[in-house]
Length: 475
Image (cartoon, rainbow, N blue to C red; front, side, top):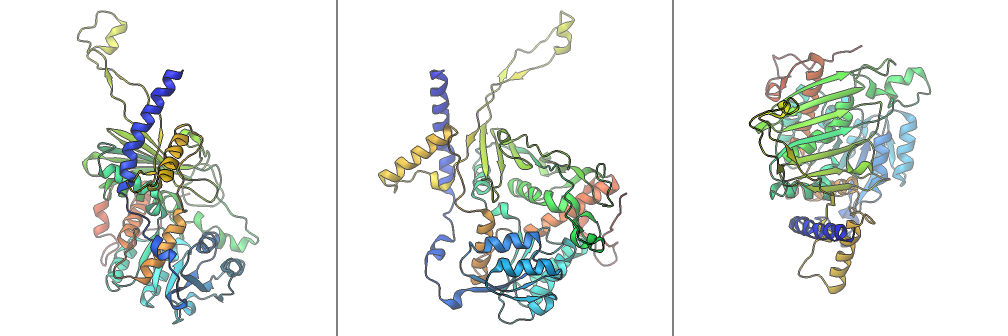
């Protein structure tokens, strides 16, 4: 047993050294110098928040962790949500029912939007036209025609920030993973698997039946894109990022199999995205079980596995209750069994001409972050602290944790871009957002029409003279 522990320790140190080199190559947090300096009052970005439901209030809470910004107005057309937004903002902001009144204010520099999906394009459009820097939650747009229209509109406003809420782009773990892929640590990445499983009907209580569609808008195609838009969009973006571009086509199956409660969006979806050179994203979202068969089952619901010829990373983002997790598995060298050229026995006939491959499974190594990377400038105490942390990681006593929640980082970087829109650009910019929305629209089309849908179809879909995006109702 002692020998096994020694081998594990050596393997960890060797593996950690490789990941440490990658972590060291990552840039330092761009916001650190700006956060540390004293700000004058006129350096604050004054913002308005449109849509103070569950997601909007979540973001408003996190905005308390971001310096250099001040909420001066909130807007929601559902009174209980509006009152929650006012309370969460905490500094007596002005309140509006009509978002156009908020946009008309000259003292608002930026607008954050967290309304139902079907309203995203219209409010984002109006915000840009009002001269505001704009953050919009994913999925950025709802229909095919909006993809083209928003791209053209943003081109007319090059010095206004438009950022979309895909926060994995702001996670150090995901950034480190992308660096590892670029440096060839995982070899040729050929497959990604993503899941977001829940054991829930995802419904919200309705105090009055007349408010059903207002409160549970996610259940209806008139307003929403189902689990493809609400959940899969995050992980499709991860695959686009790791593969370096969008898919060629998508196929999929969706079902409304469990919840016969009047909704018309699928309660389970399975999708396959084919990228250039045969690379694939395999995606699943179901509503009847939340088990996650990744990351040693330390988390539930959502995560991704990124598979290359030289290694694998299992990863998931953190939330307010759970830290992010990322484990790296080195691909073991396969042990090749002798080729069977002639079958003499009946039992052997099944293996005739076959080559069997077996190899021992590797142990997951915690992915190290820049703060754990060794540097020549480290003091003795800093170096020893890093060694100690890495040893504790190897024993499973500690896990690496991101210094900041990626939601906070994404909000912070949005406001930094607002202060210097010419020189700073969002990681999750308009093209990232439109690629993601394109995938959502075409994925739902593939499931609805039971066919392969090429991503090139978006080039003409929704344009003048073409058929507008259909809203197909499924029983």
